[in-house]
Length: 91
Figure 1: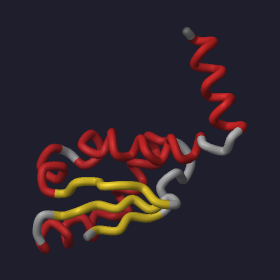
Figure 2: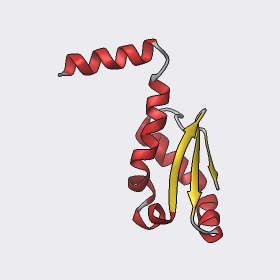
Figure 3: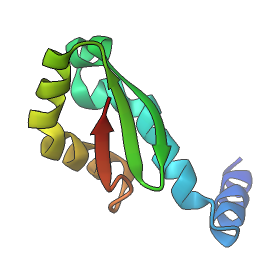
């Protein structure tokens, strides 16, 4: 099984897709990073060119995420490795 994982990782890296895969992981670890309360009210929609797009239910939550943006980006990048997510836009 480790050989398969190793081969897949090598193929992704060779094709330049490893970064895109890491970026997409941000969508799956969102709740773990921001907590249940924020995750209920702010949903990550996609990652485009290293920019995480998040939809907030209300302007209050949009403001909350804007205030915590730097902290959230640091936590995401700590879990994902390197500077995978460069920025975050809240809609």
